[in-house]
Length: 114
Image (cartoon, rainbow, N blue to C red; front, side, top):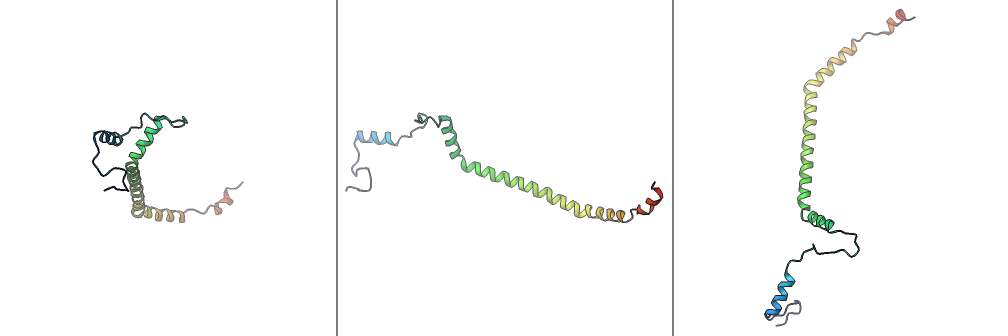
């Protein structure tokens, strides 16, 4: 029966038709492509094919790298806050006590002025 939705005939192709089908299905290469406008070189075409083939891998590497950087920054931040919580707060209390005991020089200013 004739299939109206397919380009192939329902009968089995003969030898000549089989060769044409194999040739049409053969993988075509882009290395022989020449740009008629001269704006797009074969090197740029190679790079763009490489980019599209590896786009998902590049995205995964980028996300993983950002996660590692984020973990490092959060780790150092938590380390600094922990250090302040256990050591820095006590040092701040001592510093405020020393500031409260600081001598008041306005009284001595009269004696040492010209």
